[in-house]
Image (cartoon, rainbow, N blue to C red):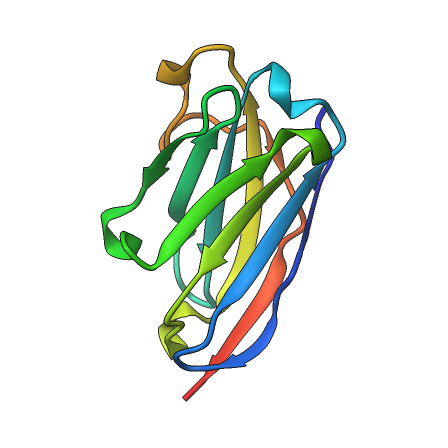
Amino acid sequence: QVQLVESGGGSVQAGGSLRLSCAASVDISSGYCMGWFRQAPSNEREGLAAIFTRTADTYYADSVQGRLAVSRDNAKNTVYLQVNRLKPEDTAVYYCAARRTVWGGGCGLTVDFTSWGQGTQVNVSS
């Protein structure tokens, strides 16, 4: 079981930016699909972005394309989510997830992620 710890959330005004971090307890360079999701109160969980750690291939939800950027630092076993031009509707708990895979075809927003972090709260005020 991979332990994931998110950080970087907080309160920010609309138009601002945040960089969220997800630290993993394993060597992610061996091949993981790392995903970012969010869930707002009364909403379903929403997939945002994913990255295959071996190649840095990325996958994004159409709804956030252009405002988000996912990246990874394999040396630090950490994945990042840069969120720009924040809007009040971006307010949610943001979660990191992981799935072991050695090929890029096993990565994306709809794969069965097996490990989840506790989440970090993002509040965007207008």
